[in-house]
Length: 211
Ligand code: AP5
Ligand code: MG
Image 1 (cartoon, protein in one colour):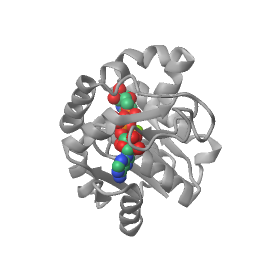
Image 2 (image 1 turned 90 degrees about the vertical axis):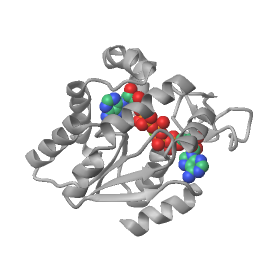
Image 3 (image 1 turned 30 degrees about the vertical axis):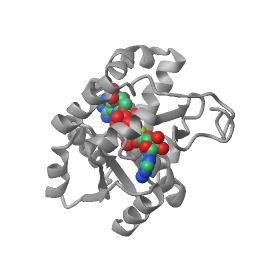
């Protein structure tokens, strides 16, 4: 299975990608997670993307496409993958199509998880993530012990781009640049739209039924 997941901030792309990766035994590849990891390491990629990510703006396409292309070449991605948060505009969608064509592969589905703006804000402003392994929590569903990750014992904190002003900027970019990709994938017969306003388990059932 080769699947891309699109959707506004806090729609549950990362949450559902984890479930799907488990179910299908394929890697969950999230450009946002890769960028945040690089920023934490302070490496060359991290230095190149830091200002964009922290301001809630898109990292330049050429760099983003290169990062994805290299990741898709890894052995664990040979039999499928779930791309979370990529593509985010027409240039990236076309870049992915070229990449796949060059490998003789096709995208199976483009999943769009939709939620209204008030849900986006509530979920992102309450979100907490493990700064070590990336596990995701929420103020309403914290880890068992005092903001210590259940999975790895790391510190659980708010994401630096989850302030209200930055989330609003990210939403603006989503509507302007990413949402038009619905038409792109609809025209190619690949679009699967799912309403993300239910429990994570129920949204997952809807996705699996749709796939
Ligand atoms: P990225 O990390 O991709 O952020 P995003 O697209 O803004 O999406 P989020 O991660 O905020 O939301 P999500 O849908 O994954 O929600 P989650 O599952 O965590 O990108 C960050 C930045 O990196 C970008 O702004 C940009 O700068 C850069 N970037 C990344 N990709 C790029 C690209 N392709 N090109 C250029 N730049 C790029 O859920 C949110 C919260 O809600 C959690 O607390 C979760 O527990 C909770 N939750 C989830 N589902 C439910 C549910 N069903 N019910 C109740 N709560 C739920
Ligand atoms: Mg995410």
